[in-house]
Image (cartoon, rainbow, N blue to C red; front, side, top):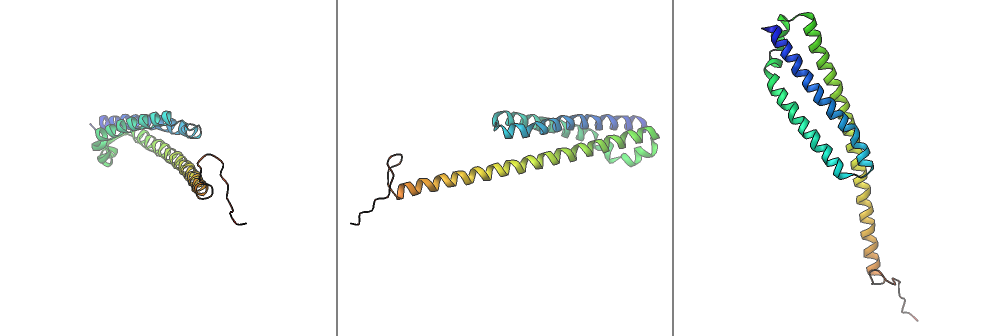
Length: 149
């Protein structure tokens, strides 16, 4: 029974890792979309990632009992099965670290862009206020009139 459980656990871990590999691939493409300001495609990629994460959650639910029973299953499993489980866990950990790093870098880049745009918008708003204060006309001949003679 433990051998069968170990194989089911290995398969579940592989399924998770496969989904995480797809998520990592999508995350890697996001930067180019951010730089190109291609928000529609970026949103599509985010939706794909959400769908993959839902699949990962489903696999986790299916394997949660096996994971919680891993110490028991491990004692009854062979060395090869234990090695495979550990390799899958390590590969998944490495992928998750990569995904987190990419996401954090992209988030930082997005925040920098957002702050830069915010500053540009504030600058434009200030210029508009100054034009209205010193000359009045929105798009025309704006100049300061000195009426002292």
